[in-house]
Amino acid sequence: MKISEFQEWIENRYGSRDRERGNGGTFMWFIEEVGELATALHGNDLENLEEEFADVFAWLCTLANINDVDLSKAIEKYTVKGVDGYK
Image (cartoon, rainbow, N blue to C red):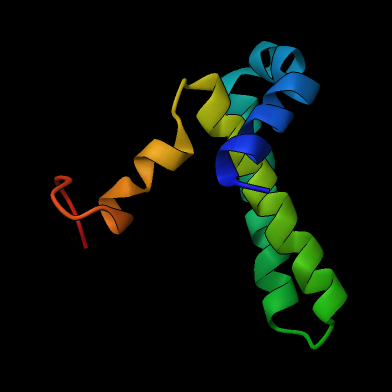
């Protein structure tokens, strides 16, 4: 699945609820998941690590959606020569 497809899937499944929650609440959920990922990085449980990476990515997509940011376009600064900010 492409990033844009996943972001669209998140929007279709959770978009209405995410927008009601807003940036503040959504950001807090995102940070909670980042904390869980940090804890998982200190362990040896690959299944848990994969789960936490997925959760962080899903909440990042949610934040992008409620702020009308296309993540596929945003990451072009890392992937497309000629785009301002190309790394």
